[in-house]
Length: 221
Image 1 (tube, rainbow, N blue to C red):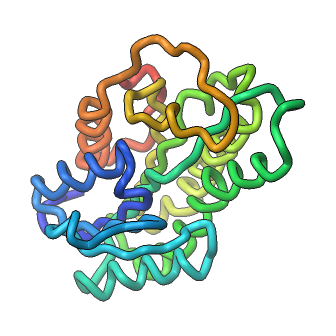
Image 2 (image 1 turned 180 degrees about the vertical axis):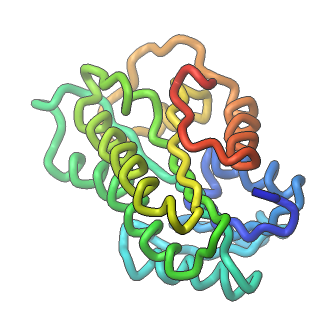
């Protein structure tokens, strides 16, 4: 994909990776739309913004329409939104499980479905599922399952979209120092080893988008 002039919608564009993706893609000349549940347009003067709860299909449609309205088209969607929870399954409430799947699994599916109505040949769908999609972790069972489901969706939709020449990238970096682990929706994070530098992860993601890679396992970071 040629990033110069490309219209890219970033879900979770105010988060640790999403914010950096917006900044670095902007430096490459991409035209960015940031979607997040809470966002102040004044904080993102170089991007179009839309406040939306992307766990809802109608809000995904609205975010996509905002990107198209801002730049006349949509070339790529990056799913950088997500939540995490810690604790054994016995300690994990049903509400927490539902929230994990709504944010980490349903959101990418709903947003992809909305985006495909506007995306033409040469477009890209990027989802950050994470290393737990490859190596599910004890104490993070529901979170691991939500991310593994997201990775499976990317694999399947990649095959569906091959004839449309839309690239589908699933990225599975290991623990990255974005601060997400400090903001769980339930439980307390274990003592992780030092994680990846988020700027390095973002640089690798952009390289994959530019070169039309389709799979970024943990070993790629």
